[in-house]
Length: 414
Image 1 (cartoon, one colour):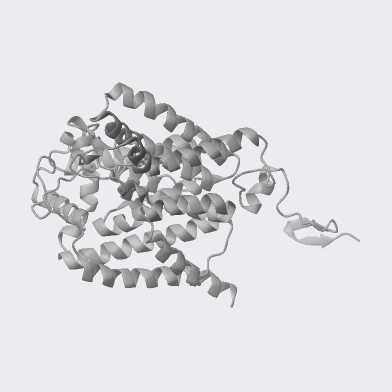
Image 2 (cartoon, helix red, strand yellow):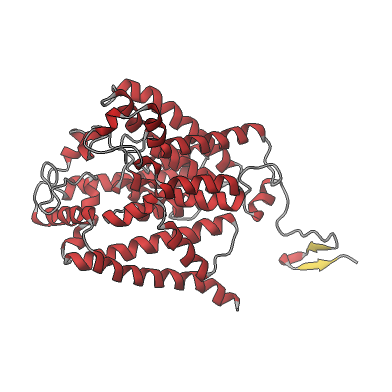
């Protein structure tokens, strides 16, 4: 197989998966959140207040920033079956491209057949399955974040991240990560892009100020925070205390946890392991958010790909957590979480506990192995970046007779 064919194979697989997903989406239909997205787009077109009312089909309110409603305008012109087809195709394509991006960052080639296998295997993970069942946007947001945070030195890096934050506020944590790792230009572009999304919302979307002034930090506006699907520190505290925790208590518990995870992310990112740093920042985001529904945890996919390449034992445990979905084993819904036993609380908060365990392992590894190096680093960076970190010229080879010559050509020492 030629080099050009090997390069094209993953992208052919992406297109094939998207085509199959479009057919499946059109046949399946019934995507609850996708109806809400269409309702938001129609509200913008008709000049109706976006907040304070609900989608007449599903009876659910639109809970995203105003800019997100602008992006949903094209969906308003489509029949439900076509919107479902295109949305499912876009989500599958985003998942497939994310798989390729992650494996490229790890340093592994990804054949077309492997892209198909990994994408189909990812459907067994509860967050991914939920994402497709509801017609959610999380996979698309995750891809935008991965592209910008893994390669912040690109000319326009940061713009996609800012737009993603304009759709869902939680990606703002990645701007903090970019500042911590010294990528201030990318962080500035992200902040500017986010500011533009906010301004566009105020200019175009009727009643957009309501989003920012009424209930922005009210977790109950997007659903009951005690629901087992809310895998965040706030959700765990709500279930434990029998009601929403005081804001001070939530901040005192969640802020230090998220800060430590984010600082650990920055440490590994600076050591050259950008993928591990990005994944840890995502976990900090999920832990700190008042509401992290289980379908927000699609970041389980890049973490799993990272672990399968570096620690099979951890990979088996991590993957099993999201395939077996123990968070739904205890009784849930209609306030039954308030009657959980101690065992139920452990099992019902498994996603949170798995994230904390993984972050703890990464933090301890960073403390024990203080000096970067491929032999001692938990998350070994790709070979070219490792050599740069260690002060080794990537053009040098193991053969001492071969040295770089003038104009980049190699010459053999006689």
